[in-house]
Length: 316
Picture (spheres, rainbow, N blue to C red):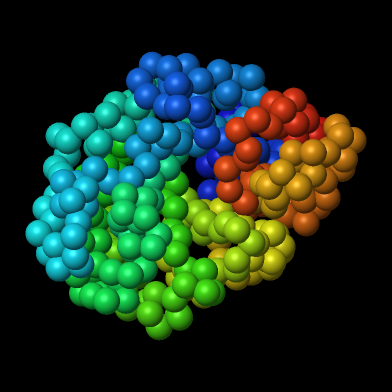
């Protein structure tokens, strides 16, 4: 199998010759825009020889809407309007996707990272203000997320038309200490689904990233029925191993490694990392499983550690 055939088999829950590998990191500010980003991303892909490229949205965290940049009260959110597909925030990311597609020249697949609407709002205004506003005026926040969703849909459309194989859609904000399940489903789910459901009308290779951090578990049940071609989940934060993730999400899953500095992937020896790789493959098998991390790896991870995973996966 070549890399594209291997990924197609993964998405179709078919047996692969060896379990594909997809591990990722962010790039520093000096490599977060333009050709510097393209060069850094492609060097990382070439040096590790992984099975595909997960394109980061480095340099485009936040959501540069004028209303969000000048908020004084929740009701101001009712004034928000879409940026539009020609705005640099969208157009430049679409160009990034097109440049990566061109650089890959058909060798492998690529997936572009983006966030759910509430996370774009939060990345722009901060956790504290997001929580204050959604508690004080949930309808205003829902209105803003609905508008932001239109721009994220434009980003999805542009990226898939540029040749990206799918989007890596990060859903967040479901920590058990943030909202109840009922609150999440009422306040956050509509924006999540507006984008994801649209993406699924354009392609079948979209990946749901059930993001977890700070060792706080998620209400995973709020995402269980979000449709996607595959799921990346936080095995260590949500205490869900590979067999149970397959059973819970009922589709191909991508993950298994702890992404934190305390994890074996970051601090382990070659022998320890390759033994962990083999253990994860034994759990996941060669159908509907791909090796990956809970989330982004530390920026200073030794690149040899990733190569050791690739090497071990191809020996089984």
